[in-house]
Image (cartoon, rainbow, N blue to C red):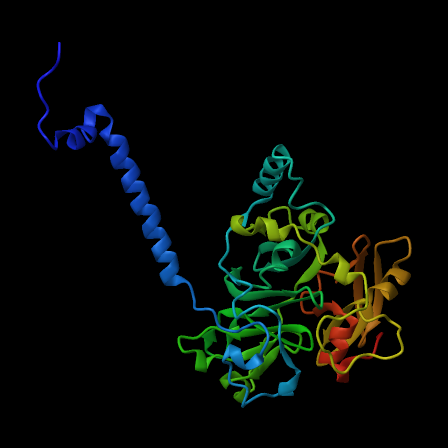
Length: 364
């Protein structure tokens, strides 16, 4: 027996009847609107692309106040903010990192952080934090707060250079980004401002502003004591440490390595001056230690030679005893963490030499 006739137009409305499953369409529609709203929000927040990756002028920074030779700036091959700095990032506890590693193993994707991975370690006011280089290589700058102190954790894989700075400069707390420019193959940061014309450029390995209003004011960055160590050493000394968490969308990048670049003396970008003589080789890892106003530079090969079968070497630097710790595979060295007043900077030899030719003498 046939049912009652259906009036024209009733079929469409019947599909949306709640009891007949129309709720599913309504929920789907709401979800689509939410996703669309998030997408539009992200688009509105996305910064315009500045810098063509080739010409310095396309980045729009004012170089008229430059404190270094303008011709030594080069474009790094990506735009301003092409490597996104992290701001107050997500963190893992050691237990969460281990669970993350287990999840990766279950998915047959290996482990994210292993004992020999190098991390930048910072300990301030009773709070410890580790920043894995495999993450830092693809962001280069992390604006963070540790122990109540605003800091910038910076790493440049072209120079294998790691430096941590205070973000309080004068009366301001700055937020740094990756400019897309290089100076002597080294990271050039910028301080983010409401108006691009008010931004300044900062050299990672010279610890100062090199162009813009901050350069005119001769602003410098205060170095925060930090170490570049194997994850196992940092975790053993700081069992309550937190760890910079990976950004899920960039997991594929974190798996890429700079090892081919590290394995040769070939430089990808212009550097001047370049150390002569061939020894140590251009990419020999070094650690520079500052006591007072003077820097003392040591190659890791020299430290390894003094360490011998042990793990530490204590020597006199500027009249003070300093203990170096050393690990191999990959090489890592750091100054005794108990001497928190000692500032140290880790970098390839060519980078330290080019950016500090006046303080490039090796040894104590």
